[in-house]
Length: 271
Length: 224
Image (tube, rainbow over all chains, first blue to last red; front, side):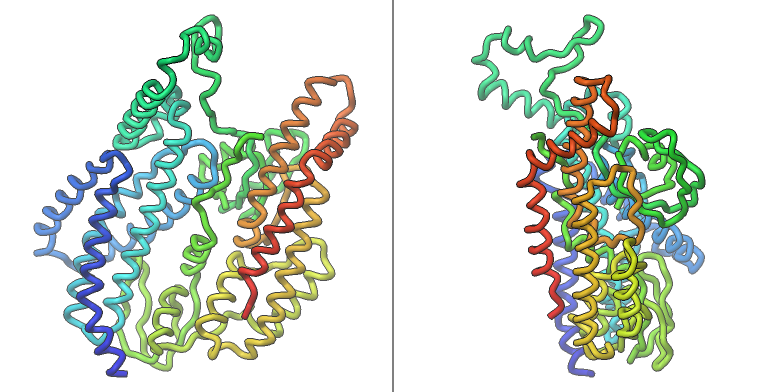
């Protein structure tokens, strides 16, 4: 047994370094056009507030934090899956910021625990746990960024979609669109005659709305969903004459537009 | 045909990641007070008192020989035989845990010595998997209209169904919309029947794809 522990202890400092490197990479992500730079500022602020907090950390504070952490992690996990399987962009989940804050405190606690109780496996478990939380946060962000890139024009044209983005995401969307436009203009659009582009323009009531080539999310796409609440008698939009009893844990293959409302009031999750 | 948005970024690894949050009972070989992971308290750890932890914790401890994993109540030869039996008799899916494929695979891989008759378990799981995949194939061949209830489907099954099912239903819908526009006088069932005819002739290659995909999945999921 002791042999296992001594091996583990040798590895410990390495884990801490890896951890630090991972955090750094996570915060200054390269391919996101530096929009995520803002998080660096956040990180700095949190560190400062931690120094102040450290002096009077008491039990009740930790308990309260734990409660928030478990709740918010569940919310973010669900938000990640919903975001991943829905076609349109969903409202930004503020759980991300709250988790980010708590994670810093967790990290400090894990480090002190790993140093004080070298023989216990708990320090290691705390580190893995932190990495797992970061993974969920990372995947959530990535999923949203990928979706913003895919539907950038559609999102910028639509005020409702724009309102669902966080501030850095909005900035990212605008900069990404500008970049694409500049690139396409420089590479081929400038040699095309203006008339050929006008053909592609869609008009609504005489005013130009957008290009026909803009990709919009297909709200009628089929999705898999599961009920997380009892809804009772309900009829889906596309089949208004069929009443179905919807109870918790029921799984359905449906059109996204049929369950859009249910997703908004958190009666279902996409799976 | 339009490119369909399948969740390219969501992989089988992600399903495993989520499955690892399910709780499992362990018998610890070490002493420790309660501690919290992701804000949830676990412990205290006092051998030989059993306690519940997430699967990833159990597997980490197991890899360091710090605990014994108690196999979940559904993962027994007895229970799997009952499930397999109802899977054969009923047209509906039998009630398996959402992450049954991942959990059983992880346990058979890393904690085989804690399970009773692992060889038999592997065989039963393999049979169960094949029975359920057959039902998916039949479901696709019937092209049942959506909304369509699919209770007790597991995470892994959705993952392999998704690309093909989403594509099939989307193209079905598009063809239906165009045929309805063209011949609005015609009755619906006739149109639907014709749509299915067109579908099966046009997209036969796409439909055949699911066979290949399930075969790939089979290779990935063999229990040995």
